[in-house]
Length: 206
Image (cartoon, rainbow, N blue to C red):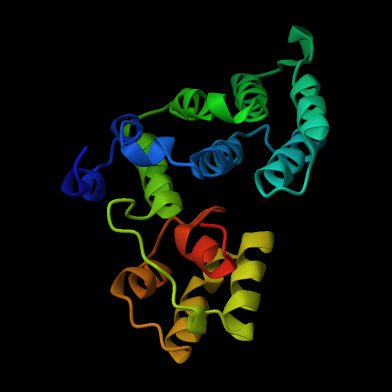
């Protein structure tokens, strides 16, 4: 896949062939993508799923142990009688795959791709939000990491408060950032998701 193909691609399956999917930080981003897809399921608000997803996301950020991740994986192995609906079964399956070791994350992300063309386009847009332009990554200027920008980025990430992205653009510009990719992404309509490349950049998670 070329840079031009990546930037215009609205097919998430094709995007998985980009070299970025095998980068050192790809497992974390793919894990967050799969967890984000779980939020689309009608069963995603089930308390058991919320707890498992939180463990997986904390593991992605180095805040949960491998033992906790394995426990989360076991928690998805509920009896078939609990699969009350297709949405319930799908969320359970996605969480199970997201709780596997890093080397399985690309497979897990591929399994997350499901639905009509509109859904798949939204999934591709989420991948764009998470990976940005891997062919032309932005190198952050340390001066952009002010108290304001870091606090805003942390709040956006932790609270999933993506409506604050334009505020992050303003704070970054105040800090001297004039990068069109960064500011443009913050001001775009999105969708924006946890793992957003700009938020990660400010928080030093790239």
